[in-house]
Image 1 (cartoon, rainbow, N blue to C red):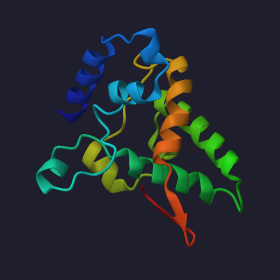
Image 2: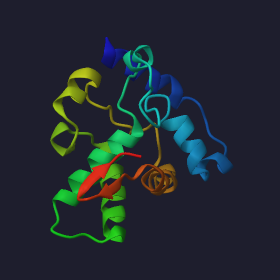
Image 3: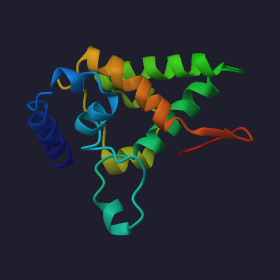
Image 4: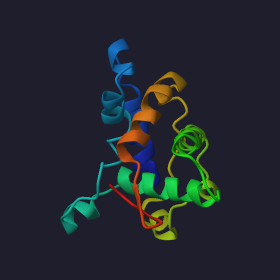
Length: 148
C-alpha cells in the first residue's frame, strides 16, 4: 500500500506544471518537488513522526555526505559538494538500495524511493541540487557528521 500511495502522489503531483521563474528558483522547486515527501527536519511529536512518508532532508543529507566522505582519506569541501551533487542526480533517477547510506530501518519504514524520471527534469535538478546540498549539508564536528 505504501508504494502505491507514494506512486500515486508522484503521478498526481507530476501533473502540476511550473512556470519558467519557478524552474529557476531552487526553493520553490524543493517545495513543489521534494517537500511533499521529505520534511526539512524530523518533526518533534510522535504523532507527526508516524505520518512521515520518507526520511527528513537533513538526515538524508547527513547520510549521503557521510557516505561520500568515508570513501576518501581526505576530500576538499568543493569536491565533497561536487560528488554529492553528482550522486544525488544519479540517485534520483536511478535509486538503488546498494547506493544508499541509509540504515536498514529507513528502508523498513519508508521503502525504496521511486525514480523521479519524468517528474523532475535535468534542468530542474541543476538548479535544485546545489541548493539542497548548501541548505542541508551536515556539519563535521570532531570527525562526526551532525545533521543540521
